Image (cartoon, rainbow, N blue to C red; front, top):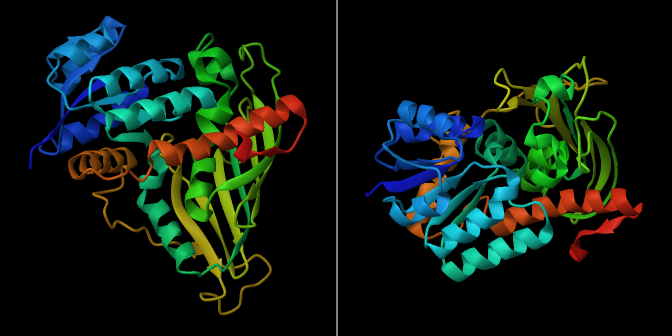
Length: 356
């Protein structure tokens, strides 16, 4: 089996999370080149990765580097031009979430990759956690029955100037496409879609208070979701706070049981074991149930690191010419939920996602 040769663009924090896959599985994925407009940052990353081919111009990397694919870890405003350029060069594409800042950006990217015939995968890494797979399995097996209600929350545990630093691009709505809904809570929204299917309608409210959030980046948000299968849901975002009981959590309420997530010791991975209480397991449920851990499911995964698992999945999809679990088309349906919440917050209306 020939290793997939990859060029990585954007050598910041998320790129460091991707690096382990290239280090540990060089026979499957080989990091042949890196690119960043910040030369000093790039050279430090390249030295740690053992990569010699370094570029400050993405198009030059596409032209000169010996690569089959690109791993795009740049700010959201760079996603569309880089994806379209990579597709035009015939390279397979792994793109960190979110795909784009607007529906039109997403549609242009999808059109470009489909015309080029290249693999296009979005990095929704939490689908590649064995804990997530275990929860998906018990839902599909019907243990908690029909899922009626879901809830997901993101509570950042510090004010914005400490969380990112003043002037960070993630706090700029023009660069990021919004605030922490599109950059953070999108993880939980994607998982809810993975577990129980697409969302049909949304109603949302967004607020911004602190001056660090600029150009329409929301700081607080809450929304109701209506799923095509009949379930309802709620999402809550608190970007700026000083004391929280937890940071991120989701809960699924079914006819015959409930599942909730526990926090991870690693901030970037977000979730630990899922906990379940169900009629199948309870001798006597009690008022609050008796929750026990959901067994993780490692089928098709090499370990606990979701970034390693997703990158190896990407390589397999490129090699076998099959659609990724988090394809561009599928991931656009996650982003439609975010775009719908933004549109609802602007207009005060309930939004039918079929119109986006």
